[in-house]
Image 1 (cartoon, helix red, strand yellow):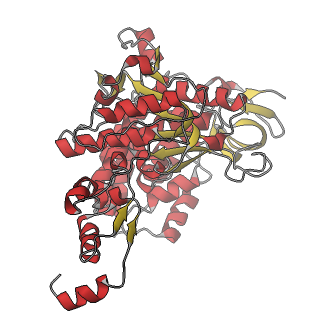
Image 2 (image 1 turned 180 degrees about the horizontal axis):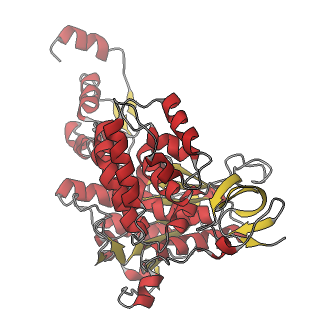
Length: 510
């Protein structure tokens, strides 16, 4: 625009301009389009204002809204016939966007016949919400819907953590888009390593990760330390007797002190997690100095998750499992063969036969910080995008109770965007809320104090060749008895594991 000769030369090269996905353009891109069409205004843009959800990438919703004013005489062509979803789903999506403050009004319709109304499930808590979703997934799969045609969508990546544990414990394969799985993030692996050695003190992978966090300790030194206690019946106690190097003795001393604190017999799993974080917090802030606040939020979710467990063994088992590898043989020729978990931002442009939108509670969707006008409206559009991914069935869920990072409970209500929808547009299923007041109720919520009695398997004499069953690892054969309180087992699905007999829940079956 500062050099008229250059502008004229460039503009004359393009007589017609077509821009797709115009709702995702930023201010600079919109200005380029305006300048390219300076002499002729022969511009056509294609876009959907209701799907403008990328402001965090710089996209400006108002580019598409201002277009008719920037180009006087603009003709607006509305594409309202939908070839993806059934009419009951479209009725609900129309209702979601109807309350938008600014929009190009349109009403989606389809010629696809039939269809069922979307379903809203009001869960008691996140555990109940996860079980409901997995139960429905199992039912749909048994009725003939392949896993790749099912998707679970959520606002933020960590909102799926509880669901991931439920899917894993039931051996349902899934892939996650828009974020790492629960046990894939480095900082979460760091914390889980401490919890795993509390259950299995001979876990060399976890020890290696912990020891390498010490300043001036490298792989060779870490291996030397692990060799010093590999034959001990109590590696943690044996570690305390190791003589550290002068340059890393202070950090080593802090580790020994922290391990002693984590092993206090009166601690619940939540208390053990707190002891881990007291030691790990400065390490987190040092190693991940550029983004540790984001990682801290994810660790807060782990804090909530572990608070729902009555014993550490169950939590460690749940986070140790990996779904079966999908192959063409076990997925009917479909190499992907997995259920899809995805943030809504990563799902735009995709579609599935059945879609679950989870976490539709106020404060989560929209997020508490998104209470300003523009952000609030973008959150509404985000829900619209999620709902329009469904072809045949749409499920919406939210927990009526959430556990805070400080392990107090708070009541929640459904998202205000859902409350605006006419209830006649969806079916409702309600799981009554209940609060953990009595010991029996606390146990249902997973808050009961863990038993101090050793597991039954601790009183059994194991020998190589025995066939055993573990509640999570399944069936396996005893390979070796390396110590008086541990046993090495080759599991059919999960390979070799060394288990501590004071905690392992093993059943001898042959």
